[in-house]
Length: 163
Image 1: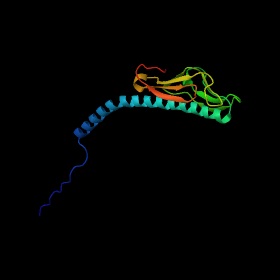
Image 2 (image 1 turned 45 degrees about the vertical axis):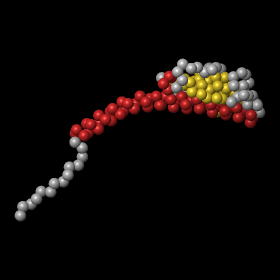
Image 3 (image 1 turned 180 degrees about the vertical axis):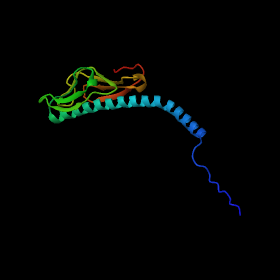
Image 4 (image 1 turned 90 degrees about the vertical axis):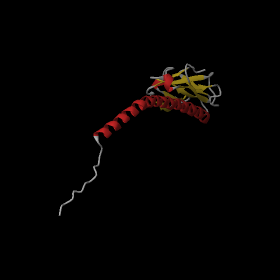
């Protein structure tokens, strides 16, 4: 009696299959990485503009609640180094924001003050948030605060500027 050989099917990848898979992966990454970079920049701009918006809304609500002036203060009109919300009567810091990363935040003034009725103490204010790297691709955002004290946020496209 002759013993028959039992053949098991081979398992695994051949070298050619592995090379094709790696080539397809490299092509997909080459297409995806630039889009990811723009996405990250865009998210940084959105997050920073939300931080400014939240600080303005917080200052407004605290001014109404405390029945005193509350200000959002930065060292200069370049708010990229951070800002604080403080009660003008007691000089107490209510909230602070650290420096932004990868984003330029510029404002028309270094201090935005809310009166006890929630309105701005002087005129209006503008805050523009833009990416440091590719601002046109990542988009820019403009926050405008009129005399009523309510901040409004909008996306800027192309060469548009904060009104």
